[in-house]
Image (cartoon, rainbow, N blue to C red; front, side):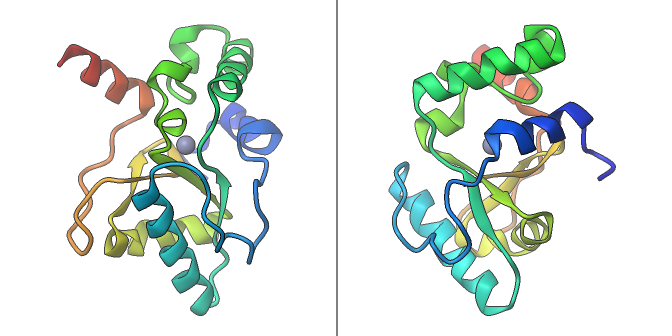
Length: 159
Ligand SMILES: [Zn+2]
């Protein structure tokens, strides 16, 4: 847990990561980017076949959900600048676009980090072991991780 910010862990447990589905229930399509949904379904089926627990803790979020998370994060971290490292405003969040998925538990996330590129799924941020996006062509290596969500959002905003 060397990269785990204690407040992020609290957010993980308190809200953002409240499981939306239990193990074994994620064969049903969830909303969001359909390619992403199919990829995570295949990955979690393969993980389960290997005896590794892996499930979605947070996928697509509504604008309202993300706004609430953003307010909570500002309260928890003390400023928008600090909060942005862990939670983005709704207009910037890949979860609102349906492009991101958070997974658990830690064992499953580690498995997905090692194997997810088979389905194009990559861990995106160094500070969020649970957050994955479609980020590569299936079967090819994942791109380097960003330090955190704020660094990427700021980079994208400038280009
Ligand atoms: Zn996420």
